[in-house]
Length: 226
Image 1 (cartoon, rainbow, N blue to C red):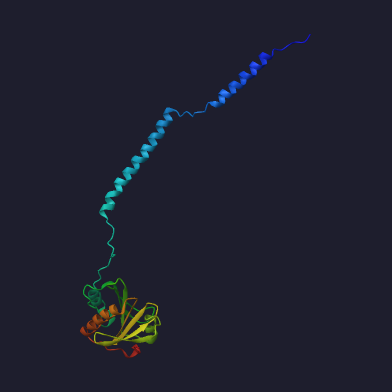
Image 2: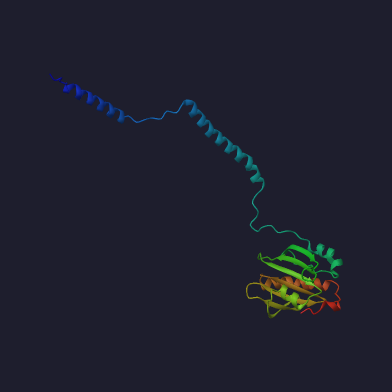
């Protein structure tokens, strides 16, 4: 005798399993965050926001108390005349202190002993009205080599009249130029990228300063000035 199995029983069993699988696949899995963890996360975000606001509140007064500089930039106020007077004894002559009124300003004034070049010099830097620059160098011990160094080996291209004197004009052709004058015992070199009109204004003031100072007796060992 053979044992018979009920097809209805097998079918119903398979169907039940399939239905259970299908039902389980249709339901999405939803992650569950514990209430305590969610509370801690919210507290962290709120804390960061509060810290940011506190930082802004702390730095805001500092920014307001330190406004941005003006567009024309900072210009140091150098008293060239005072520095020139202090340098007179060591220089052996009265250094020039050109008076250009309020049109030019100086960003440095100093006496250099000439330890590197062997030629002690009085040096002043001038900022022009057009925001350019002209450097002034004066010495009573000028020589051809030193003069070439000061003018960037620029060739003589002509002359310019300023302050009633003829200045030698040297131009590199690359934006840098120099005006040279040997007068009353010293040699003055003006160099920079400024316009010739600005050179002329400063040169005129230099001549006036030279003529207001005692003439310098050139030492026989000083050598030629041009």
